[in-house]
Length: 90
Image (cartoon, rainbow, N blue to C red; front, side, top):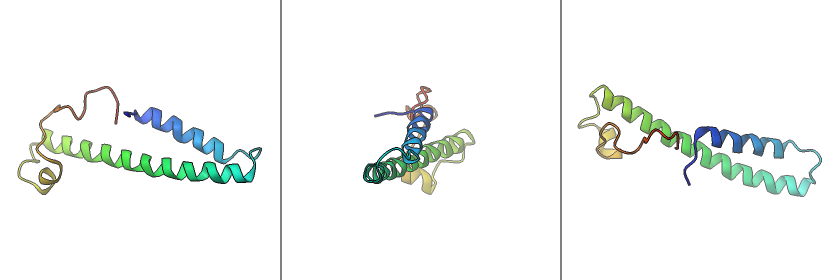
């Protein structure tokens, strides 16, 4: 599932509202908090992955990616190779 950063922000905001809901029984809040922790962990990884792509694209635009450890880790990238299709998805 692709998700934009704005969509991710909305999901995280909803999880915060759920966690702060004092009208929800404690047992249900505990269960929801576990779900929120999983979502938070996945969100962090999504943001980290997006950061790697942005850094790699910057290096490409500066002509500094060729024959580097980063290129070896992520594979050869070309400008606009499909990782960023300008639709805002992560």
